[in-house]
Image (cartoon, rainbow, N blue to C red; front, side, top):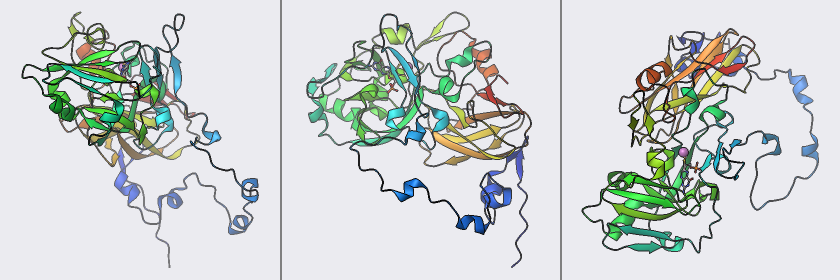
Length: 429
Ligand SMILES: Nc1nc2c(c(=O)[nH]1)N[C@H]1C(S)=C(S)[C@@H](COP(=O)(O)O)O[C@H]1N2
Ligand SMILES: [Mo]
């Protein structure tokens, strides 16, 4: 039977962006038609495929708690940022290696960490959660008592409001997806709905807000509107199937889907229902937006739609011209991602990427689009759209509206510039 000649790829936008349907729908497989980076060989060579040592000797035994392959050592959180390390180590942050991860779930050992005074060593048997303030029946929960309530699960991202703050800098900061955008992770959280617990405590009609406080040595606390608390907030006990890691709030944390990471109070030990916001340190001196006119915008809680291309991205190399898959993450604290457009020519033309399911509200969505790199300079961008109709802004548009004063909520489009030698850098478009 005569082989069909390979179909031409249909281009969907400038500088080699391939129509994802023309790519996925190809007869005869994409790899053979396009000469992807497989090692071609004759059948005689195939017969001689070397039997490696690891096949000749019996393998290793079992371990109680598994670790990744030693060849994956480079896939690690970093850098450790401890601004006050001359006084104390612990307060600071460490970021997720987004450029090395795939799919939508962040493995627990790679979830980013941000703590204001280090990780408390909490004995779960001694830990208590107090519900008080404007409630009819104040309650104290042990972890064991809380664990007997019906549980729910949801996949949700946590993003620090300070993530991507470097994009407020006047000139483009050097960095990777990890160092620029790695204060973002996504996990499956399981726990007890806060609405259920508050219902049992009996909400006083005057209550409109709550204060959530952690048992860490920062006693970090934030005010959350009661309407949000009754909508989708959870007291999370599990993270990707196992108990929450100490660094992420063991034995319980507040999960406030789509809102500033800071509001997801870890090591949760107190919820007080109040009439108004408590005006804590972290909602007055921080996590608010210093605007152009010197005024401060307070209580901007949801994280607006955003995206980042994780592959190709700085630190990864492009060895030769040819076909690549552009892959990345998009998310919105206001709802569900409906579309991600990708550009390879610095934002002149865009083509829609495929969204890899499941596409869930307030979770990250993986997007993909094939790209034929001709070996010339290129500028990669992704632009997320959510189901409120909101379109992720360019950096110019964001800066025109807000100025360069704010430190938080930077959700501007990121631009990866690729040189002819395949080196990828962060650059402003
Ligand atoms: N009790 C307490 N909760 C806290 C913090 C903290 O320092 N103490 N850090 C907050 C900040 S600023 C962020 S961005 C998120 C980070 O969550 P993670 O460390 O699980 O990624 O937790 C929030 N919850
Ligand atoms: Mo944060």
